[in-house]
Length: 203
Ligand SMILES: O=c1[nH]c(=O)c2ncn([C@@H]3O[C@H](COP(=O)(O)OP(=O)(O)OP(=O)(O)O)[C@@H](O)[C@H]3O)c2[nH]1
Ligand SMILES: [Mg+2]
Image: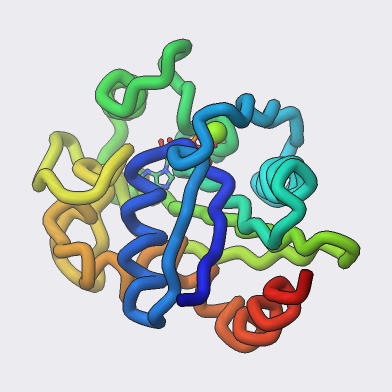
């Protein structure tokens, strides 16, 4: 079976990549399978830079093709925050519940029309000996005043998706994978992924 390695320790992302790739007959391994590998410092100033840092560090460590994902929530009324700091918006250690509470409290007096937001996902594909490539995907919505639903992870319970008329956390996995920022980024890899996988199988 074909296999891809995703440079993430986030169980929510890991589950999504497993689900999306399973439908293509590709097995996913993540850093949860390699606990000995240290954290990659996310010192970039953009999602793309951080995705490249993760993909290249792990690709070098394992000498294999690796995909890095750097993603997050951008809220217009907060000038794009939490942005690249989405995972640790409320401080260390990272906590989805506290991050979401912080966004809700910062938007407390902001009316519905001004609560527009976007999920952003940058993916970097690092292959030993080759130039790293990046793609990105977005998902547009707005921030609810309170949580709805229990699927997904992160900010999903407060991210309203107008086209579906529900919060992201009210969508099933299959539904999220049709419209999410991560799925939209991955679609752009479709064309090249097959050939990348073939090349990465060479010793
Ligand atoms: O509601 C959400 N639905 C999503 O689909 C989603 N995708 C990303 N995020 C948020 O953005 C951070 C990523 O930060 P991030 O890319 O640095 O990842 P991370 O630190 O969690 O893990 P790693 O991949 O770096 O190991 C995450 O923690 C989440 O808070 C999401 N929230
Ligand atoms: Mg991270």
